[in-house]
Length: 434
Image (cartoon, rainbow, N blue to C red; front, side, top):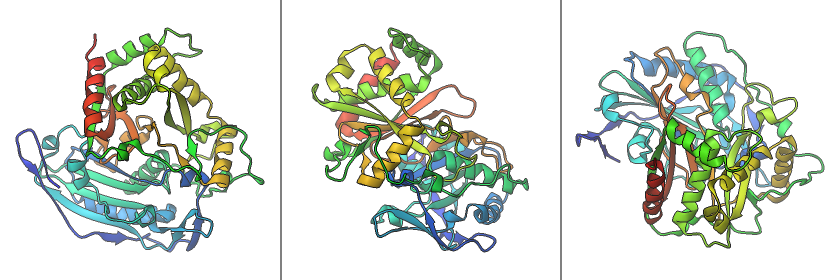
């Protein structure tokens, strides 16, 4: 893949062959059980961290510390497998994490604003395996460090979401940074996932429209339209976010809607319009909600695994696009509020009984990265100037800060070409409205 910057200069990245970085000490062998929450989002996630400060021997330094931190987070050094009852599990073999060193002909400045999603460019900065047959073949973690001619670096991380969610990844990365700087870990990872086991007997206490049972095939609208997927990002400045919050106040809220809620609601409306979903059909917005603080007591600090549950806002497409903006915001707000300890336990049991996957038909998923501590990741050469997805999972929408200390929120997604053209027109019309 090649990508050009504004001057027409082509980004080239020369990569060395990957090497396996093994834990610095012998770790536990055997099978590592995954929870039902781990099973429900079987996708790889790729992230780029851009550092402007000139560094020397960065690759050698973090490769050495990676071996040390893998002793604490040893499941990353294993591989996925499957049990007799179709659940994924980790084989802790200590075989290691693929690590790649690379150099680029760009400067960090020439790389530009990486918060604008651009898989053609940014995937060159992450070690990925595209031609795998299933999620079982995707490494649990890969690391690439690319040195730019200005001395800056980009750290490319690919994780298998089956093992960890964004919060757990951020905990791991910041622990790794502490080890790199010679500091003791502020907290050890909590590796035991049995606290998220299904109840015995499992019981579904609450409806779970966010899931589809195996008896009904999942329909991904994005993939059903036979067009190339186009990726775009949209910037929400504080003034626009305040304007959306004001629009939402047509209804009485117990608490003012958050920035994330109004951005999510607007995206959901525009996406529904762009796909031209029939008015009588149900449309859904699933939101990744961190379940850790929902438990009483909360899940242990530095819980290693997937702690997210998915809220489900739903209504007919006709109501969503025709009723006031406050209607959509209120549905999103209330759906997120419904994610309680009981809701999560019921969701865990739902998977136990049905092996259901996330709903896709007339549905999109959204995740808030701006709450994660990615911008705290300091290996000794300062915090990243920008953090961004290097690729996008179909059906997933992401929000994150534009750069360190920025109040601008970037929303990124991929859609079929004709749908994106319509979505972009609708979204820009709203963003440019005074």
